[in-house]
Image (tube, rainbow, N blue to C red; front, top):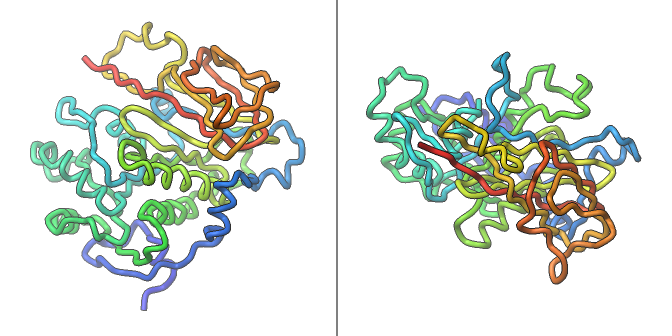
Length: 349
């Protein structure tokens, strides 16, 4: 029988050994955890240790900024869900949000039918490129219960050497199963990405989830819940976790004592000064959504309409939607977790 390590989806298993494994119940991912999260009982792991330590900063740094001069990015994983891919093409390459996220990622997963979507969006491009071209769109892993994976897609990726692992348990979504693979990948991180290496103010990895919007509302809420449940796991404490499609993005900002710093690609009117074309990134229109319930105190800087902490936000009363980021860094301090959401801008020729 297969070991638990395989059940946690190692990304280096040869595709020719496509297997089916039972679903282990991950630690900290129980029904109690999920219900507590949706009721707003979210406590970051750092809270117990930090007290009122003001240096505990949660950061979201846009993955759409140009690569730094040293060419370094933090290690990033991409999960593609089973929703339509609306990215366009530029010189035989995926452009738009998905194209940028693909290029920014070093580990790529298709969640079940997400492989169908990737295949349908890129097979024409792959046909135009050589077999040995590293820019071909091959994921590292396809996983889930695989009830949506088409046989022609399965055969294609298997022949290309992609790992394909069936994980059987209908109590967990394919996104959860994909996040287990990311968790395993993060656990194999080099020593410099481990805690204790002076990363108080930075995330040491990122996970991009593409396709979290635009489908059924219950599926969208399931994706939001995954952000909550997985974001509070110890193994994801230094991982930025966010949902994307071609029109919007969303991620969770934790409650105090952690302070959040958000750097989006195009605050204010900055995109107007860009001379380049084919630009992609978060736009200035944004919102703070109190999806976990009433937030008694929220204080922000860097928004056109800042919250000063004197007015609660909650559904049925005030919700900070259609706000606008005007500074390079937006800061948020909140008494309970909130969703930060921003529009996506795609500027092409």
